Image (cartoon, rainbow, N blue to C red; front, top):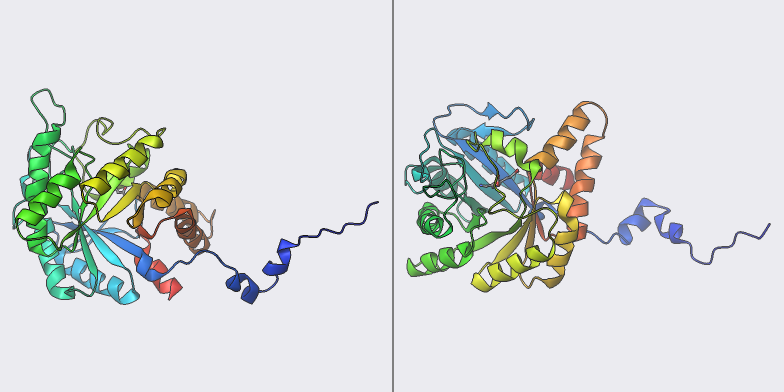
Length: 326
Ligand code: PBG
């Protein structure tokens, strides 16, 4: 029997908690977490979302309270989604000053000022009666350039309502450039853009569709990316940066960690990843069955997204995880 005498003993650095802490490569801090929140028009109390246990459609009032608590817990920012009570073909509620998202942004900016980074989903899908992220032409196809005009109007409504960062998530070509120009022309050159640059046509958005009462019948494959394509993501990121994106985002996160890593290596601007509704629902469902240790799993998921290269993570666990990490 040859003597077992390995020269390299990585286990030496794993022997105590203090050693492991000393050599830990990846940080996970509350400020790196962004909490997505839903606010429903006309709601007088929070409404549970069945496929996202623990997440609700807020009333204006409960949104304000939950936002203050999340900020107190140390999260880096809030991403707000509106759920209107009425929808139409062009998503009028998105640009109406009295539309739920704009009203909620005003509430939150009044409540929180500059204590957090207030972000808004700059997309029409919550507000259209066909559920697409843009306006559709006579044949039912999503019209890229007509949609851009709506996004520019939406950006101005959100900027005047108090958002610090706008999150165009519709994957229309040219959306970042058009929004940047509209903001600058209207005197909002300080408002930044968190671009959903590489957003895939993913089955993992399922629970989100329930969260915003989505009216979508078909799919988003003509504007969101094919899950098999990685090179295309780099191209999307390059275009968004050239058009003026202040940060870029990869979405979903867990099935696209390779894309996230590649983008993190080439991006000159901060990189976000969206740990989306389906990723949340999978862990919650397994944990509820006793199949996974919930807290350990959540922290491992978030740590892995950081390790892959995300500077910040949008996650429905943001406030809770921030408290654990405090
Ligand atoms: C579009 C948008 C979606 C999500 C964020 N912004 C849905 C979609 O593209 O179908 C999904 C977020 C999630 O699943 O958690 N406004």
